[in-house]
Image (tube, rainbow, N blue to C red; front, side, top):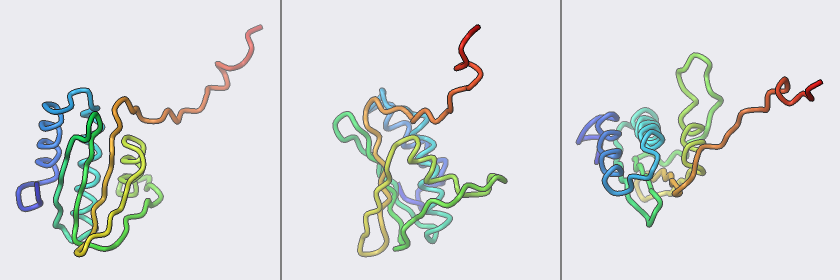
Length: 134
């Protein structure tokens, strides 16, 4: 699917419909968020044009977003007002490392979901519950 075929929401819906059929054990909520972030980033920061490809790789899932900008995306500090800086952090948390593959006219940003992967649990232990009981 490309930007001329639809919106970020259309890309998200198409990706989750495909994966629900092809790999129902995948985390569809995580997929929807990852697709939204990668496509929105391409639309916002790489000139607007994007091409989404979602494919199954055995029991794993590969999400590629091509764009026409050679600029390598970098994770920025998240803004507290909710206006940016969250995208790559979210993708890495849900899917893992992000690959940047240069192309003749731009790049591909690739995220890979490995079967059985769950987001990291980054919560700190609650010191009150860890205290010894009298």
